[in-house]
Amino acid sequence: MSSFWRSLGERITEISEWSIENHPGKSLGLLSGFLLALLLIIFGFLQTVLLIALSCTGYYLGKCWDDGRLPPWLNKIVHRISFRGKDRY
Image 1 (cartoon, rainbow, N blue to C red):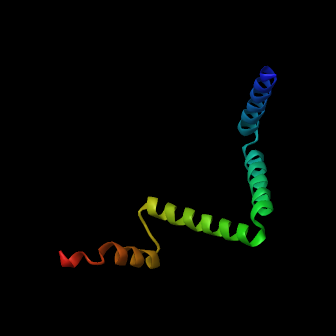
Image 2: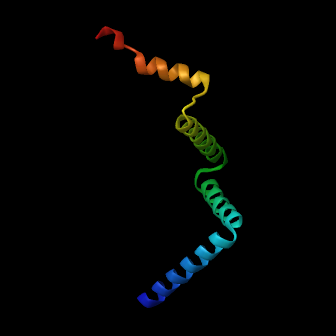
Image 3: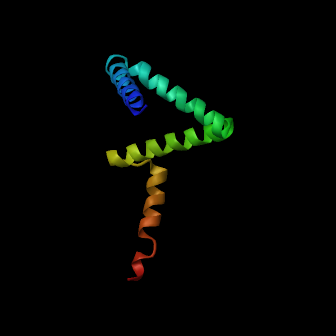
């Protein structure tokens, strides 16, 4: 029985690798659609929308941080938090 599962796993891996190499857009679309459907089933519509919105915001802010530029409103907040109370020492 374990050889069956091993061969099945190897076959699925081969198909996945072929699909990603030859059809990366379709593979990404399939994976993202599946994950979206799973999130909708587990959390419901509004919670899934909130999760996606916060994830996109986090991605955007992380990208800005990596690029060395922050939006002006976030730059103000970061400097207020970073330098608060440091004049006392």
